[in-house]
Amino acid sequence: MTVPASPIVLAHAAYRLGDAYRAAGASGPFVEVRDAAALDEAVAQAEVLVVSGLWRHALLERAPRLRFIQSVSAGTDQFPKDALRARGIRLASAQGGNERAVAEHALALMLGLTRRLPEALRNQAAATWRPMIADPARREQELGGRTLLVIGLGRIGTRIARLGQAFDMRVIGLRRRPLEAGDPVEAVFSPDRLHAALKEADVVALACPLTPETENLIDEAALAAMKPGALLINVARGRVVDQDALARALTEGRIAGAGLDCFHDEPLPADAPFWRMPNVIVTPHSAGETSLYEGRVIGLLIENLGRLQRGEELVNLVV
Image (tube, rainbow, N blue to C red; front, side, top):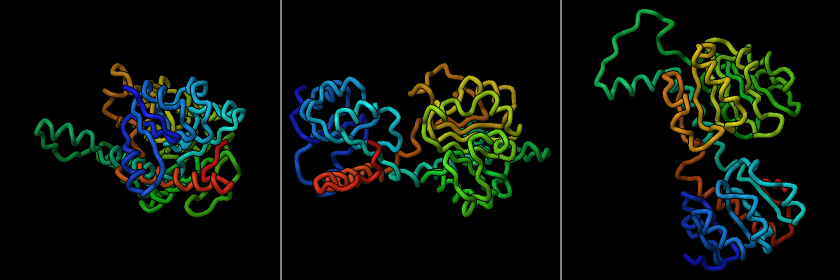
């Protein structure tokens, strides 16, 4: 297939960015591609590239005219920032475009685990009416009164904290840069006090970016610091967690459960143990994927294109 030349390339395997671009009334030609081969062809003429999962470093050598990348995702760890800077290519993230969606997803994972919804769905599929449970420890749990630790108090993390607060949870946070405690967090811990924060938490929600400092942040020692009844929620990046250590902790009952939206390798391989664990909810990195997302990304793109033309600071500038 021959891809027509265009200064704007919208590249995503599934999202209907082109429809959102037209709906926004944007002027100017664009081309939409959905796979790596088509992107290889289209990027040669591109001045603007809207992309996330289809990005590969080799594209830089094929894109002599490229001057701006609008990431489709809030995270930008996949992009070679030094190489972009050396070529004078600007990069902006989609930070804020999915903060409500991801925060709601994090709460859904918490509620799914505490209200034992996976078990309920298995019983529904088997037409099984579960009898009342005599042992209080084996019944559904409530979020109210529990302590929620949010690791990463950016836009998403702060919104998770506010939702936790709305469920009458005690909310504490961990953040790399100093931040005074205050609504919606009762206390803020620095990274060097991670284990102390983990010891207090009934639910740990990961909302931090993937950096050299956060890779494998939740390792064997961190998991050992968590309460036996604690839950781990990951809506950040898969590599923030040592997956082998997490699988062992879950299997051995050293933590109670996990809600996982992101993994080291995606799609999650069929032989990964998390698929078969009754105390785990797996979602396919879909926390930010709602019917409103394309419109928000395109809104950021159009705003940033205008700012580029006017020589103004970009929204969510990374490079």
